[in-house]
Image 1: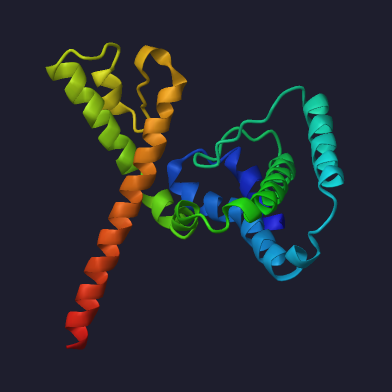
Image 2: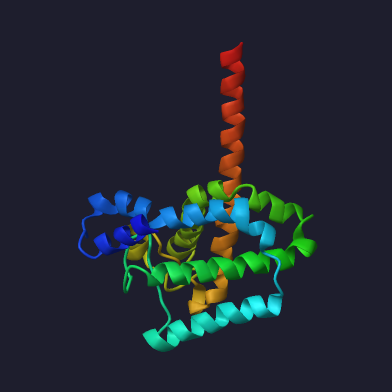
Length: 207
């Protein structure tokens, strides 16, 4: 926790991107440590009443919103948006605690779902490759916009300059589901191909 708080404090003055790797390492250490602690010790006793559990989380969060005056919006990827060195961890732990309990509640209904199991076992691959899936969707929009005049409002300039640019026809946010599905499917395909190639290389090396 001390190292993580030092990382946040340093982010206020170290704006150069050359420090980003170090700041990321420091910032995420407490989350990594708490994950290990939860897996080894806390998960066994995480069996309290759901109503009381969520009531505690929501009450603490409401107090935070009341005293800070707004909802927090952090950008750990750029180490920006932090108000101080401790509140990001309080909010982060509350959010994780919330989704851990939601996951426990959903387990009986989803534990045998093939789709959920595939996604849960390939989260690292999805994290690594989802941007390529988003890029492919933008390429499809680009083709439709430039060759068929099928859509309007697609920004070629932003497509060429913004990594996270997404286009929604008529500004309908519901179209983001296309990016979500593409990011997951493309990531899984890349991971599958990678595994096949690695297995073939390992098989040849053994022979």
